[in-house]
Amino acid sequence: MRKLQRNGFKVRMFQRAMRFANLLAALPNKLVPPPFRLIQIGSAYWQSRALYVATELGVADAIGDDELPSDEIATKLKLDSDYLYRLLRMLASIGVFEESTERHFRNNKLSDCLRSTSRQNVSSMILLHNSPEMSHAWFEELGPALRSGEVPFVQSHGEELFDYLDHHPKLDNLFTSAMESVEALTGSDYLDDFDWGQFDRIIDVGGSSGSKSIAILNRHPHLQALIFDRPQVIENALLDRQKGIDSQVLARITYSGGNMLESIPSACSERDIFLLFAIFHGMGNPDAEKILINLREAFGQHRASIAIVDCVADAKGIEPTVASFDMQMLIGTRGRERTETEWKYLLERCGFVLQEVISLRTFAKLLLVRLK
Image: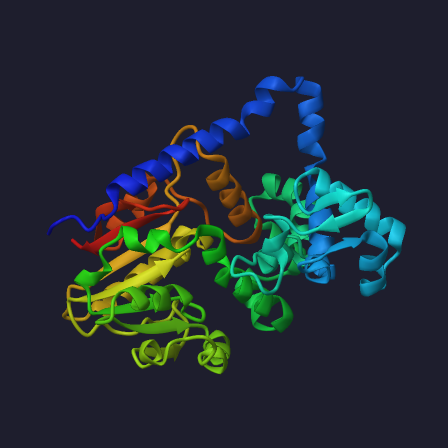
């Protein structure tokens, strides 16, 4: 079968830009005296906590399109004016918000992404990663986990992440919202780097409200999609499905609730493709193998395809973004960011072959998988 990679030149330009960005990010290690640099790294959580609190309080929304004195922002939010000024001053010093004149602040390119009206809003991702539930696992359980090999989140809360989400709806809603904001992180150009037009239907496994499938369907009028996720996620998706979605696209989408560790909706033809976006990196090999076996059963008599969108870690010299995601997986799950060798081992154990690694204009790659 012919290669399904598209936009090769644009993808190569994106990869070069990312390599250059990583080189720039490494400059402080070369230019700043080592003891001071270690102090910078060791106190980086001061910045993340300040950002978390400003996000939780809705400071960017309070400022809006205006340029406001910190006293007025504090009055709007019923906060101590001096404390808020010092918080905003610190965030402005690292590029979040802009201090236009003394004690007057406005939104800038970064803080605009904290506004609820922004299409690039990543507030829920910041709130999730800095939530008390996640923070406790990082701050209190990482050291013990390095000795025990246990999952820090489980040690903090006594159960696996998704079991915890099932009966903590507030965190579950935040988690779902954060997963939906991935598009704000990555943009949607990467969706054009794979030839979806070769297929008739996407089965979006763990697809949440289906935003990624919807974006693909907008580009390919012949495609249909089945969105499959946990029942409570699908219930919320059905409540929200009328919001801002073209009626012609809606007519091509169906929804189904279930547990991917138990079963996955069946393929109807060889032109079905199962999409698993950032699913496997949150699973250890035993659960990942269960999913792959369920996928194999879902194929039935049809030799469908699988598109796994996930990171592929370098065996040596891993990119900082991928290494950070890997540590977040260590904290919250039994998953990891896998190397290409690890992906091949996992797939081949379950009767699949990695047919093509598609480079995308994002930090992940698309693994095109078929039966052996």
